[in-house]
Length: 322
Image (cartoon, rainbow, N blue to C red; front, top):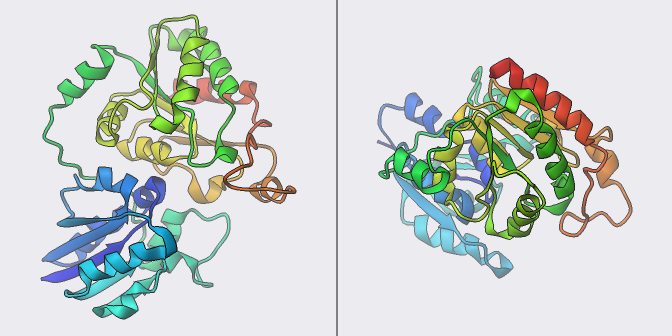
């Protein structure tokens, strides 16, 4: 029995992008016991992963005390492998045969314009380790659909939020995009659902209140993360900013469009066969080198990605997979 500890990200998107490692270790060793440590948000999804034996939630605390509490929970175990994707160094204070620390941030693998999934696969000597979620959720899918969609069919998901302001395409642009798609014959008889966290309620309400048509369903802040996963699986298309929900949509296999500005689409585009990444004319470096740039406070670095560009590319992309 191989006992493996994976210390994953605090962010949903990063955890999803590296989720293929769970099945990688399962297939590499006949018998494994995998413990998965991650932030609160991704834990809401990964606790349903059938290939994980135990999920440890890392609740962020002041003075980085969360790492001490994680250490307390795992120090009495002897680990065959510790994979620390966060680069915390905690594995040096644990009993382990093998330690892999921050594999994507060594000089050898810190390559620009190469996707994180490709770099991760290269590190482990594999052709590809794609994201993979094998979720086991007891509630019937039909129950979730009836709860939120009332038997609606032909659904397009829109996620106008992101984990920091600078990555958010203006809500006014999402409203105009929706109006353009609603008037296009390719989206005739389609419904649009708005998805996001409770922190994005204002954005969801703005789009819903300013849209005259009734085929927009505002679900921002309502479904749980696992429910969103099953809702996305029923959608015909996803459009959203670079976010955890974008990566979640891509891993379900539905056509996914990601909007990029200060984050690098080459490194973080949605991973899959049916994906499209649209970005601002400016590079991420140009956008983030502006005076007084702050991940927390800078807003609307996505303005130069025009509604016309997103509309035309969305229609072309959608027709390909319709």
